[in-house]
Image (cartoon, rainbow, N blue to C red; front, side, top):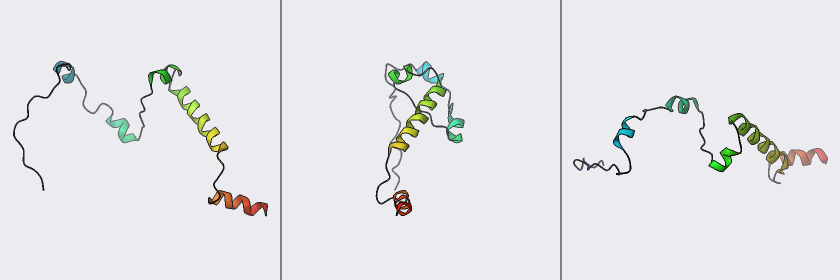
Length: 89
């Protein structure tokens, strides 16, 4: 069941936030990217400082994925392991 409206709320804006800054905000600024399926990721400042642009971040992540995939052995229960074992026999 829904609870009824409990009456008017007090202004709960913290004093450190200026109401003027909130009025300048743009509603739905990133909604088109969100609908398009783009993943936005916030990097830690020390990580962001290591990369000059998004292209180098993507290249580094792709390289890491390639290394991780090549260094992982399939488990004995996986289909890839059974296929490889059947070829050897």
